[in-house]
Length: 410
Ligand code: ASP
Ligand code: MG
Image (cartoon, rainbow, N blue to C red; front, side, top):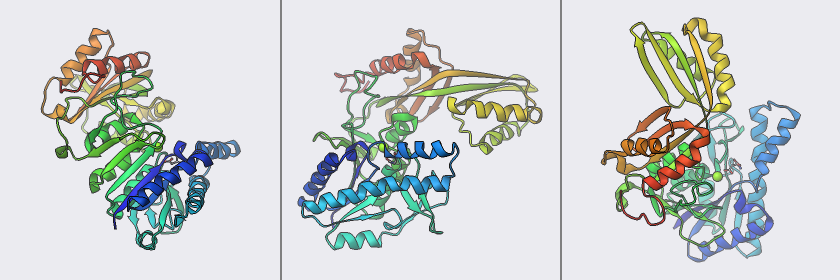
């Protein structure tokens, strides 16, 4: 069987008219001889609306009940698409997460898929049906309905592609692919034809938005051929594949930015071996995600530690730290909001020195102060003032030659 997985996001199934278009897209693949598994998101803004309704009744809805509620969104779109496919004289059957055999852990709201029992889907495909699966949801081995976190339908699609050894997995969305920067704010941003899993993973984690980071992790682990393309326009999308299958690798493939950053500085922490463990355990226990960490020693018996977090979590972080001030023993805490992170990503960085030098040169030419830096083998991120972030993204995009006429490596 030549199996493919096609996933359509919320805007792609936002109305019955759009669902009819999706049905036609699926029909084309069936005519081309593929066995199709179609994964859908909830229609339009359904998930947001459902969350708002729950929060109107209770500002802190129980995660179990919220999952029960949100899972209904995808159930609407899968049944409607099946109905539309029947109208085209195609055999189709819809499956909720549990009917599709998607088993997860029990962490409501951000469950992780532990197993796919694919027998039911396989027999459906063998019977000649199109299997239409609800994205973003699964079931625990106790029979509880879970969801995989916002944007999680991408992860459902890639997980099913891996479990069914699909030839490829298509993610249909409202943009034509992955771009060298956010095209809404970087006018020169170009569509990328192909990108490595590693680069895509960094971009997704750094806020590119077009793919759920966990779906890329899953594609990387299982070597799933993945393509992001538009459900509105018939143009080639972006292929995400193994680096060694790709041609020339650019020093920098893309620029990402994240506008929700704040920094906390703790001054005068005692310089003892377990102090960092104590500090970051306190934050982790409060479910606060820490991103960049910088430690500096200014006296032998004292250190300063600065770290970045999402500004949303600023109040919660400050509260935890104030409560622990006596135990941790720091002298002062400084909070700075209104920050952002701009990042350059590219596997070519591994072998080509000078990206950091170029990035700092570009930002300093524009007088943009760099407040924190973090690097990995294939990315470099700088924390800067939020009100300069869009400008910085545009400048870096130009500086690294990612605009319209840049086809060659820097
Ligand atoms: N409907 C869910 C959301 O809006 C899952 C998804 O679309 O991937 O987050
Ligand atoms: Mg999405």
